[in-house]
Amino acid sequence: MAGRGDGGGRRGSGADIVWSIIGTFLAGVLAWGLIGWALDRWLGTTFLVAIGIVVGAAGAFYLIIKRYGGG
Image (cartoon, rainbow, N blue to C red; front, side, top):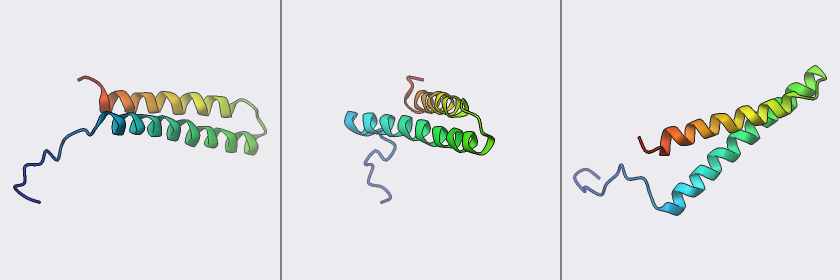
């Protein structure tokens, strides 16, 4: 509501932040790992799932630092 001044831009409790970080990291690893697995199946290779997992972890780590970093 307008004018309440309830701190709508606050970050949340510590537990909320931790679960958000875990969810972001798992979503990145699972999504890009799945994309790598699908490309492996389609192209007949065996290394793209590992690359997808690494890319997902790196992307999630970047997003976590961007969102919760001390800057």
